[in-house]
Length: 149
Ligand SMILES: CC(C)(COP(=O)(O)OP(=O)(O)OC[C@H]1O[C@@H](n2cnc3c(N)ncnc32)[C@H](O)[C@@H]1OP(=O)(O)O)[C@@H](O)C(=O)NCCC(=O)NCCS
Image (cartoon, rainbow, N blue to C red; front, top):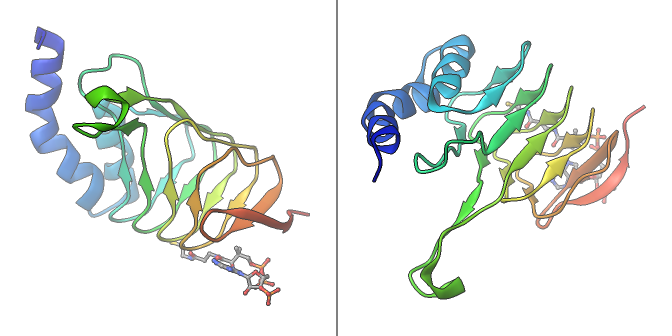
């Protein structure tokens, strides 16, 4: 573990609970930025939303563009790990959420996914693949049901 990772893990003990349980969106946004998540202006983050930022990676692994709304209890993951699968290696893949996307409550986004501008993800969806801009997706795995007008 290098010095940078040591400090990120240390500060993560305070910052991660603030990022998830902070009483206001502004506090959750601030704490996530301090953890290394790249968040543009005008972003709203719901209570209990978890945004992955592995401390061993210096680059922002989740990028959230302007005007995005992230619903209550979202999970946005940028890594996969298992002691056996993939030879026990932790795999990191960046997630990008483009401007004005709306993520309903309880959405899970898997590593490597890009959600296109102004797309809408319905409550409870698990997003396994990229979502086209201005598209509404729902379900597990998330599938398009329409377009945003
Ligand atoms: C995705 C969403 C925006 C779609 O709204 P809409 O365009 O008005 O869609 P409709 O209600 O007309 O539903 C269209 C179809 O998709 C289905 N559907 C809608 N939302 C769904 C969801 N979240 N999961 C699974 N299916 C869903 C409907 O059952 C309907 O199916 P049918 O045609 O077989 O009857 C909305 O349903 C949603 O999930 N909003 C999120 C609300 C939320 O999480 N709020 C709290 C945020 S913190």
